[in-house]
Image 1 (tube, each protein chain N blue to C red):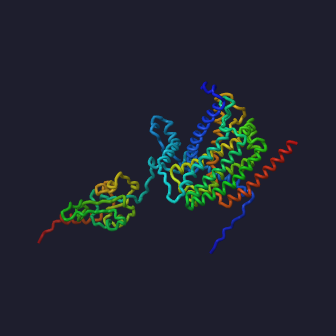
Image 2 (image 1 turned 180 degrees about the vertical axis):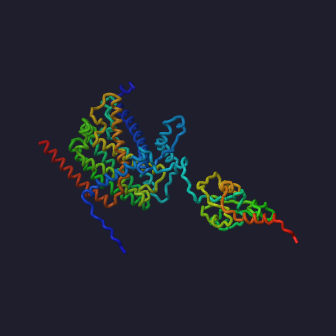
Length: 188
Length: 364
């Protein structure tokens, strides 16, 4: 369906452009006076003042620790697999690698690197993680002097990520196991 | 200084002229730089922004309170901009017509400065034989119109030399626009000169000198209005900035230009604005005379006062130029032509007729 927009012919006064001069001046003066006399501008002077990053903002992905300060990542490499720009590189511990922080976790990564120059902040790593070990956090402005500096390693990622007070998926299993060990079971 | 008095009059004249040219040229260039700053600042304020407030030279840390205030006003920004233009890569595309490509920016900038020559920017600095105008021509205004119309060649040449579509379209628009509005502009001032009876701009100022009520703007408001609007069109300013309309033509006639060559176009545009403002001050706002009147200055201080008065009036008109930019949307091309040919030219002609009739009636 076509809609015909009615265009009224301009009146004689309007054709002199004088009313539009007046209204144009009114609008511009209003804004000028507000910026100059009241000092109210819409601009934020960025490096000095910064905006409040809202809750749930999807910035740079960092690794998190659980409430006990243990690494949550179990080196399953799902995030590495799903990462569209291939920014994540995980080095698994291997058979002789260090033991995981958590008692009942099978392993944790020997090295976990995110190349922040490649990362597109898409959040697929967070979505895919079965252990809730990686989260997009509040940082949006990452800087460095070299390309190498922009590859964040495990230590740095864990430090920046902090502690995530989420569900501890395996905690009750661990407790159960411990209780069982403590339970006096007589061997036949 | 006494040595000057013993030189023969011709040498003295040449010497004073050179000094005046150098000073006027330098001052105009400074005004151009700061007009750009004013444009950026006022535009920013009108759009609820802050504008340039970062350029900080090294010495500023020795100025406790004034320094940061100046930085906030962006006073040092033009210096940084100038330096940037000098250091930028001067790129000439392979497909351009080289000679004309190099010639065009100069042809735009030079006429803009040459128009300043006939404008009386002050009375005297004590010596009545040495008026504060570079060339006190009897045909002052004719010279200005002649030079101003040269400016269009730079733009046409830029469009032709760039050998690409956007600059070409921009320059076609520009030449059509400038030629159309020159007619309206020329006709609007005819009425002014009919009242005054002299083409010499110093005489024009003298005529209006008595006080604010003798200013030409009261006697010829229509002529002033037509001249003002035509000046917007002549200087390619909004709402008539069709030649450079960014949304359609990228940058218009200077799309292919970079670095100092682009800066020259920019310089030319702002110098044209300054020249147009100076011309309007001279023709309609009593030139260098104070609003309360008073003749040529007797001493150095009075002379400087007159120059200051001229500059203040000019700057106010510059603010009008800048302000109007944000008051209107751009005119469509046919509207522009319609306004020029079917409104302003008949209006200017009618104004001439009415002025002639009134003058004839008064003389009888």
